[in-house]
Length: 68
Image (cartoon, rainbow, N blue to C red; front, side, top):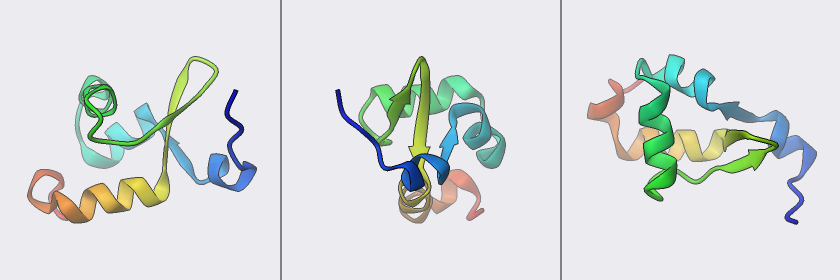
């Protein structure tokens, strides 16, 4: 089992939090994760996305996310 640093866990967003931030459906986020386009890790049954990965994805995809 892979242990995730507690600070990284606290700075991570859930699928629902990220979908609200990006203004998209949670399924869109899950598809990005399952397609390997958005690195994430699981906490129990829930996906978490590290803040640095969110920022990296936003930088690379400004038109999609409205530059948000």
